[in-house]
Image 1 (cartoon, rainbow, N blue to C red):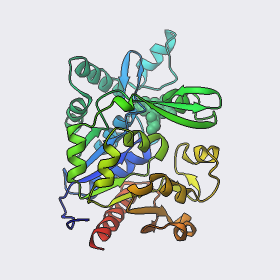
Image 2: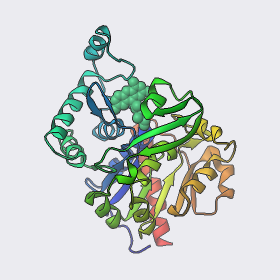
Image 3: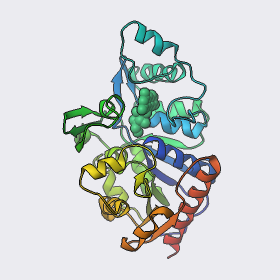
Length: 319
Ligand code: FO1
């Protein structure tokens, strides 16, 4: 690991879902403006009401802008639901709850995409409009769609996650389109320049693996001189939010979930952060570990965790 981390050195975070957005918010509040760039999962994207919906990008954007719904973690704060109610009245699909303000962003995104801008450019325009100081990069510009293999057959991601509430037993995933996706210059440049790479406490299978499936991306993370640290999404053997622990059980991983996650990331990691409720698991790990309180409630706990993780990353550089 090359040089010491200066305060304004670029930090790359890989994120998806609400846990990723919360932690990214803590990083943004801790680092100097502009030092953080978040690479976001787009495997959850789908077409709905004739629009391309990018839930993880929006969850990160709204979180970083401080305008996310504090109850759900996704969607807008002080949202209204008139369009959804009217769509339902007219017999349209209402299982995926798109609010009015959220819909405005979707309409603009689709207009810009239709006019020929790529997703990286569109996302950058949106983050500027939302006054987000950190850059937010989609993992790639091409459509990649996560397909969930379950005991009830194959389900597109949002059908599994929202419509079926992750009830069908998980069997595996395919990231449809990933083989044809290309690394964007923005993502490649970031990963080459990053002084720290942090894998947020996101679902490793649903949120991080799609990012790593973009050809060349995993290699860039592996080849980086920067310390790569992952934060566990597991607390006390359970998921803080979402189906990760259920999925792991369904894959046959009943115990030692933090170790399973470390093994899943394999040679990518230089360090791992686990919750103090899983302290007993630390002795099983064969890489440097930080045990701390990883539960993020208010902004101060996000900031505290981000500062500790950054400091842990720095300690790996200093040796
Ligand atoms: N999650 C739900 O559980 N139910 C919803 O109706 C829902 C709507 C929604 C709308 C916009 C958006 O950006 C996210 C939304 N999410 C919803 C969250 C989303 O499905 C998941 O958080 C991610 O895809 C998983 O990381």
